[in-house]
Length: 502
Image (cartoon, rainbow, N blue to C red; front, top):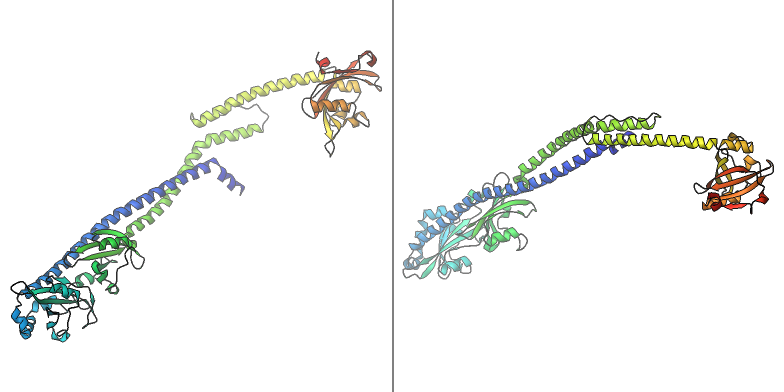
């Protein structure tokens, strides 16, 4: 586990993971951008293809509607006021129109100017004698204009139908009545060419009457006579209603995203729409994404392995240098220059280490010489020199001092061996209840101000001149030399630093 942590913290691991992270983020952003652009391009291309298909079918429907209106108009031109005065003659005229029978699967009829049906084919429908004056498509025809009705469920049949009507004029242009043809959407009709198939494998067609906010017929029969969404619910449908011809993406009634294209049918004011779920339309994009994910995994593994190998190869000289330095740190030998394998940044780094090693070797040599000089001087001095350190109790109060080091003169003057003194408390070394001259030593150790005083040792029967300095807080160094002048011949037996340094 420790090795794993070390590996995760290593420069190779961090550089490799950082590079892979940058690589993955870059590829992901590129993939997102490509997917977005590809979706837009594919939507545009599929939308154009869809609109082209819808335009062809819408053109056929418009042509079929125009043909039926023209057929009604041609028959209406042959009807005269005399026929209206003799309904049996008018009925015989309708019965002798096989062309209309093939165009209108729901039959056809004639109404007088007051809206009363006076002739009907076939007679079995029972329309003759009914009054249709309240129907808008009849009223429009009686006003002299051809009309196509709103799809609705008829009185005679429960099937959905729509009616095409044209006016019948006399020789002076006066409207005598109207001729109407019925398309039964529940029976085979000319719109089956559109509704019998689907758009592609998964798409649908819808024939819409936008002026009535109503679906006339559709590939999926459940949509027949289905109302359109209320205004504002679908911005794209609102645009289609107001005459837009083109493609777009929207949510259908099942909250499924679909690609939809619409084309107007001028004769009836309708439009034909084709839809296909985007999940199906953009299947190639999803397939490409799956392949890209697999490819990305393979590329990450390859790039990661190559990065690890390259970084390891590039850092090998530096790692070797680090191991050599670690070995030198545990060795007492003089550090030798590290080998430089390549003249690059790593080589410059190792060269810098070599220069540092030379400087450190020079400083170590100078320090060793200085220590030797100091040791020689310290040992050979005729004056007794002792290094002390204050000793504190649990309350933080200085109560004693400990001898840290001393020279040979210490033994000569005190008769106490260095081995018996170094590391021990003053009270133990001198066999006294309190440390000698503790107050003077404490003051110098706390303030750092040098101090000199005279003392007399009754056991040794000698006079000493003691100089005290503090190299750092809570420690001090004292130097003693034998004086042959009695204390009473010195001014007051005490001299301060200015006297000592003079």
